[in-house]
Image 1 (cartoon, rainbow over the protein chains, first blue to last red):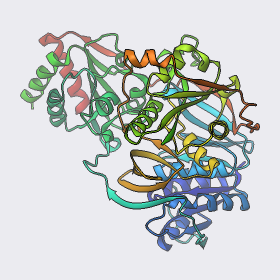
Image 2 (spheres, chains in turn purple, brown; image 1 turned 90 degrees about the vertical axis):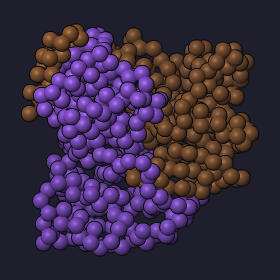
Image 3 (cartoon, rainbow over the protein chains, first blue to last red; image 1 turned 180 degrees about the horizontal axis):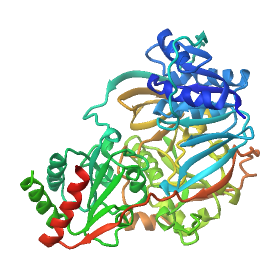
Image 4 (spheres, one colour; image 1 turned 180 degrees about the vertical axis):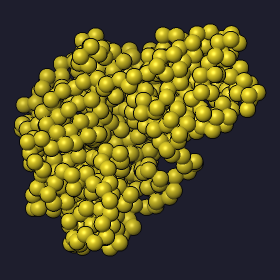
Length: 313
Length: 256
């Protein structure tokens, strides 16, 4: 049994395919809220949308989140059973505000299915130590969904759907956008890397990371790290931090160096196919989830490993 | 500036015991305040240090909040006073229910300029209580705040989106959820810990803050440790050339 009315709200056009794929699988009718143009609406229809509600981009000083109240009203009048909001930063804020308007919670889900007309969700809790399965009770269920939860269906350019332009009178909500500028620093997409070398607290100085960088260069890997390296020491940027509130890897191989293997880190590392670990503490939790491990001090073994890999190149 | 930083008491996830049937137990778990909430306390402290004012802590949760070690811990991190809403039912509260309780408590506390929340709670990490609280209070609300600069009756904040920084001018009062990168929370010194004993603590029951019941958004069917991927567990031990050689052979085989 499917739902009657599934709604999708996304500020990122790249998420339209997957979310519409999920919407088609879950509901009889799929409506999509976009903040873009007619071409994007067409793409949503080709991806599975029946109705597109096109919210005009507000003037530069207004955030799109200012539309939250109008979107909540739309969900209420159209009797939405489920609203799936793309889990970008802006999406999360919209989801929370919309859900508050509808007197319900907003759940960050990693799986969602319909059983006996009820929506069943799964999400990660306790820093990745557990998965929680819940049966939702709200009239309109609000969830945030990232990429990789649903699969995009094939695009059908002949699909028909309606496009409604919505241009609500938005108040600025007391927030004025003064400026939007690109993020400083490097842009790295660690979750797309096939090989990753990760560093942890086993390194006692920033310049020692050179050893890890040398290994990464030799095996063609991107560099990643545990949370203390990014947020405590700030030796590496947050985009490189692997873990529950950071990046989830999808690598073929992840080599961790001096990482103890706390659950919050391993949750981000675990989707990798092969886990390799080097740590001087043989009781470190990282060795309980390693395919290949070496109990040894990185300061002693890493130079040897690098020399051997170089010699055999 | 009157700042209220929200904090949640959570079980230490490192102390979770997983049984054979993947059930998890917190029986041996220590309690602490969420690590991301400490960023909200530190951000509040820095604001009142720079602009003057008062920093209050606000927690809603079960009886663990009345534990003197817990109260002292959070007070020693820079709070001027602490407000607690204690009811065992709050241990199971979802994001909407939590936001409702905080809303009612804040109305009871009175005037404020800024409510700060962390990036998410350390246990459930829904990242939604701040967003929902702002909407319920009907005041400006923003998440992912990476920098806060006071400017009269407004604040200028930097918000870290995926690839962009938004600079926002926000009229007070407002609710902001800060990132875990906004600061490094200070570690309380002996003086802070002693001073914590003398700071006022106000306890509320749910009926004292006049919050009406709201139905839960979901019922929990199960909370289970994830199924572990099968790992080969080929662990070598030692730093001799032979051992390192064997390790490099294994590594090389993976890289083909």
